[in-house]
Image (cartoon, rainbow, N blue to C red):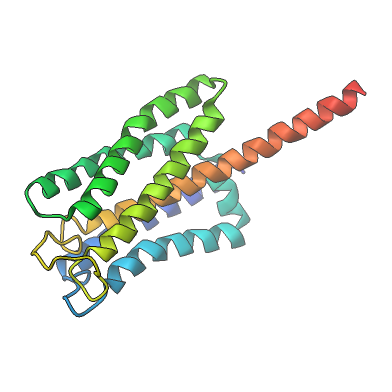
Length: 220
C-alpha cells in the first residue's frame, strides 16, 4: 500500500472513530441505551454488533482497507488490550451491591486477566520470542471468549424482559453514562482489535508455511 493511501485511510479511520464516540456519547446523554423492565436491551446489543458488521463488510469489499488492516502494527493493536484492566471496576460495583455476581465476576476477572497479560504478550511480539504467535493467539481467543461470557451473563442478569436470572434488585445501569461507553464503544473496539490481531496472525502463518514449502522444494 502506498504511503499516501495509508495516510488517507488512517485519516478516515480516525474520523470514523471520533464520530462513533461522539454518536454513542450523544445517544447515552439522551438515554437511548436505557431499557426498562419490560424491554430487552436491543439498543445496546445493536451498538455492540453494528460496528463489528461494518468492519467485516468493509474488510470484505475494500482491498485498500484490507491492506491497511493487515499492515497495522501488531504490537500497537496488542497494547490496546491492556486497557481492559478497567474491568476490575465491575468487581468494585459488585462489592457495593451495584452489579450481580453472575456478571461482575466473569467480566471483571476476565477483563483484568486480559489487560494484565497484554503487556507481556506485547513484549513477546516486540522481541519475536519463539512462542510469540502462540501467545498472541491465546490472548485474543481468551479476550473474545471473555466478551461472549460477559455479554451473555450481563443480558441474563439484567433488569429487563430477558433477564431470567435477575433478582429484581436495583443495579447500576450499563445503559447510562459513563458506563454505557463500555458496551457501546470500548467492547466493539476491543473486539475489532482482537479480530485484527487474529487476521494478521493467520497471514503470518500462511507466509511462514509458504516459505517452508519453498525451502523444502529447494532442498529437493
